[in-house]
Image 1 (cartoon, rainbow, N blue to C red):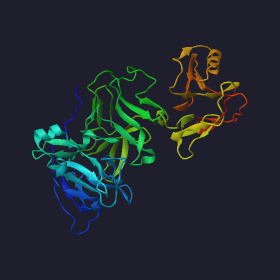
Image 2 (cartoon, rainbow, N blue to C red):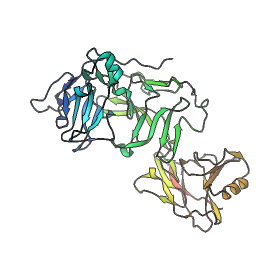
Image 3 (cartoon, one colour):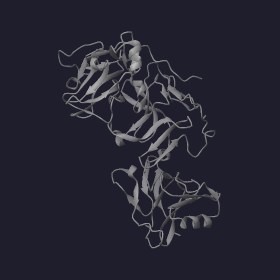
Image 4 (tube, rainbow, N blue to C red):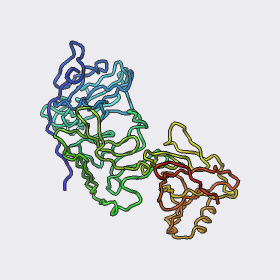
Length: 450
């Protein structure tokens, strides 16, 4: 089944005053139907001059991150928080004075964003081939789909924002091998790049990736399962996915889901966003209140998202994710759990060691072996005999996994297996260290040393 959705026919935009959407703008505000060649929007006029889609759903212009910092973005007009769905250069904001967004004739009609000093921050760089065949860019328009499009005089698209998504996919926006969603930085910061991304893997499987520049992994679909158990296909290099307006998502690798409000009232607006916590969520807006409601999420338990608590830490879901350092470790950054924990003891392979147990706990990945069926004492001896081994997991079926790094830790009652940390024999381990959820309460449980 083809997953390509036809993009809505190109419609005229309006560069209008804020009076159509928000409180009335100052008298004399400019009214333009389109941004034409050699036309420009000034950051000083951000409150009154911006492009608006014909149906009034989306706007595009200078978006105020603070009183002195702006980006060129597309946002939902009817959202209470003016939710941004695309940004031209998320990591490079401009100043509140002197910045311009222009359809620059000297650059073949490209959209060009310049800062206060005239330096080019971003430009659309319409393909040379398209310009040769269809002529130079004539206008910029914002479609009802939320797609900002640069067109020639005949309406042919030379460039479009849908080809370079940031953290959000909209209905009618194709998602291909050349495109990625990248989460924002922690706590929803618009300008910072996050550690999470959505894209197609080397096996052509739609996946969520974690990469903190030191370690990386795929955490969706379930990394504990193979592609058959995950109900996916591999090596289908069509690599195409899309979300439709009714709330149905389908990918060429058979990844699919539907919104809880599938086929809701006509006119419902949706967005699929990779949030800063690494969860991929589908949202629907309540037009009456401007509030968003989650209609699907990739993860019900955020502790299965990689990197939530950082290295040497364990995540408990109760029901919000809570992090705790592994025994013998302390927080690396008191204000940011993603930085994990650091050992308070010195690792010295020449010194005697002991084991500290963390029951019902797992650290995903970074195995020194493929997982062997061996008795506990053999597994323990191998870890103690390897300087690279910092811990091992031993399961009820006698599977043994030696760990070189403690990352993506999680714990919950019933999780099979116990992790044993290797620490110096003379190191004092706090009596209470691993918390578990029991009967809707969070408590600390004792992990005996060995």
